[in-house]
Length: 490
Ligand code: UN1
Image (cartoon, rainbow, N blue to C red; front, side, top):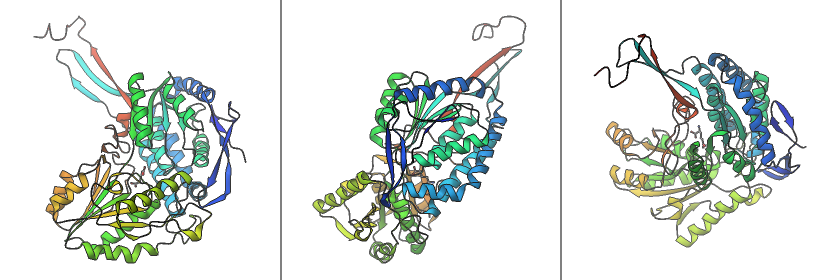
């Protein structure tokens, strides 16, 4: 089956007349369909449509925009089961996880939809008599949204829904690994009543991404993906004077202190490290354990993790799905070779799942006693690979956690209130969990990271509007004569 782009409220074939194949990562022989391998002309068409639509969308009363977004939330809810299966088929994670992915979008629709009745500004006294100062949020214009495949609905929704709530219009380039989910996203926005041209989907690869970044009418780029691509987009946006928000890699650490509840910490590490097959930017990929409980805790993981059931996400009994594609499979396998050459201590895994040869299946993996200068301790692997390190006190644990170029999420398991507050204060990360793994962000809270993870922005919650709006400052003088600021009043 051939799928189309969604431009100006219509499903259209690409100007390029080229297509790429999307396959099921759990079964390479299952072809989901062909999607447009679009070009510059397709991006131009989408941007022209968005530009036309912007004129009236930005003037639509914000609460009316919110009404449409809340209806979109209702439709995501109605289509949850069906969309979850589509998403699982194209990106692999089990259906209970893809349902959670959609739930984040539902939450975002309801939250951002109701935020349109606030979008508060500030009213401030003037320095002068008979004058009032105020400031309020205004939209930015056309937003180019470029996202990854690991949360095909949730992550785009974190950007697209608040962008629209604030009165912007969108040109969306989904990942080539999750294009079908993006088309259903567009169907839902259309059914919710979004006017034509306000939201457009252009499928494709780097050419589409580059055209979006370069387009003179696109005012903002919202990007989630690799650090390498994000950095190059940001430098180009710097030259073009475009606003850019980046959400890139993570190498998130979980600390387990000697006073921790080890059974909860065990459940936490299994979910944090191997849930979504480790393919979350928030995945728990480093485990830092107090020496007093180190051997015991490693042993608990060794007993539990290898029993996780690998398989196709559409199978109800599956706990861990495949990795996304051949490239990811090769990249992760290469880390197993690096681990061998570094002489790392393999506890389990470290190889493909041979019995599931039709898909990209990799066994959950644990290396213990991993030195902090190991590539596996430092680099984002984006797979079911966990490294563990031993420390002798809280300060060493925090130093180990902070020994990373990334700073997205972090976690500490402890029952000591002092340990937890010191960790909250000292961990260099945008997010810190106490007694929970590094995953599980909620849609109404700020989401993002420090250091190599981002560029200072926070999606989610109220802070996302700092990305998708500008401030308009207004001075209203009702004195009836000219009052010169800083001169006549001093
Ligand atoms: C991501 O990996 O890009 O907190 C987002 C979590 C999810 C979102 C992850 N709610 O892990």
